[in-house]
Image (cartoon, rainbow, N blue to C red):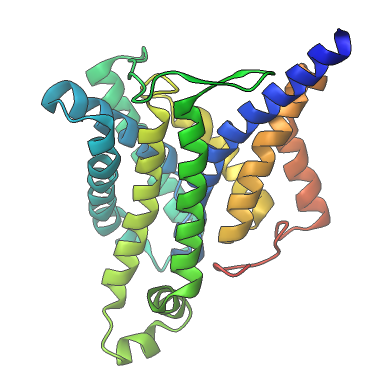
Length: 294
């Protein structure tokens, strides 16, 4: 009986870890794209994730837009916000050290979260899941919506990797990062391409927020609670590595879930222990690559 319950507990936590890992992977993917193609440390990524969840909630409560409509509209809204932010805050300091972009985006986080907290308060607001029911796996009951999140996030991660690594547009993006003068000589507007890259990474954060809204309560602090973990995931995977960010995101989610089974007290620390070990043994991350290469 004890062994049976242990297997149920382990399998259940593995599945929960995979669900959490889906959010880790998508958020770290956007962060890796922005750093890999722009060399910008986007500390505002968590706030942009939060804005995606609030955009979905606002569209539903104000205009009656369903979750499926918000899944398209909300990331676009957040991406447009990202374009404005890139133009007003990041572009003037793009030639300065990484520290300036980190401090500027951190200041943006404080402003955005402060304004949202003033407007909506600190308590979370519910968002009803669009898919009801689920499937009994024997060791746990899996809601259909959480299964949808895992599958959809995996599809988004694979699609984004193919876009960056296997298309002409991705080749232009990588070339614009390394040799902007040569790319401009071919008639390509490099500043516009860089702006759209930031908007795309921010849009991924907004998309993650929409996915998270029915699982976690929509609140101004939902992004800041997650952002430190996401930065750890990106560091472990390799700053700027898309494959490293995605694989590490899922891996960390699973490891975190297993830790809750065998040593619950360390569940919130295991990610940072892994990060320290990786930094000591492989300072460039598990994939040891800069840019978007694997």
